[in-house]
Amino acid sequence: MTWKQICLDPRFRDLPFKIELNKRGQIIMSPTRNFHGFFAFKIGEQIRKHLPDGEVIMECAVDTADGTKEADLAWVSKGRWAIICDEFSSSIAPEICVEVVSASNSREEMLRKRELYIKAGAQEYWICHEDGKLEFFGGSGVLKKSRMCPKFPGKIEKR
Image 1: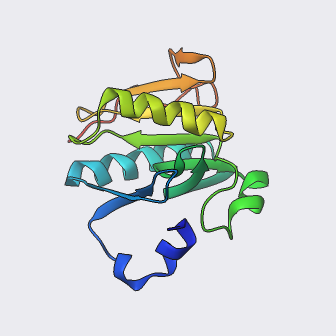
Image 2: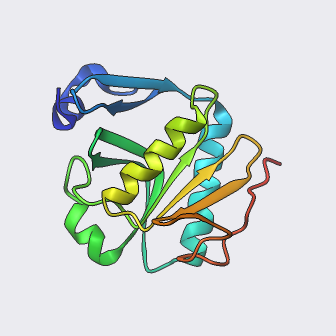
């Protein structure tokens, strides 16, 4: 199955799951809890505040070497947005891809996604943990803070 087929198939509308494809076209679904959407939204608000010259995308589909992955949120420059805005899945990753960790995610899976997004063109990859703490990564590995958004806080408060 392709990402376009999933997007056009009414059976996959309004599911309470995050959907991704592996490189064999198999569907992977992951349930999320309320804090997942809360953190994604709060991170998006902060990115918009600190990087106003681009677009924040929630649930951004990205073509990777291991199928279509869906970043919980992403920030994309206006130039890159002009390329991907009408695509079903981003042919080039947004500059920042962010994942909010769910109970079903392993550390290995999160680090594998970092590799996939970076290889697809992302400049940074962020992980938000269940406690709101963020980790920042660039192409060469762990960053103390975001290089693209250096004023971004290291933690998002739940309350």
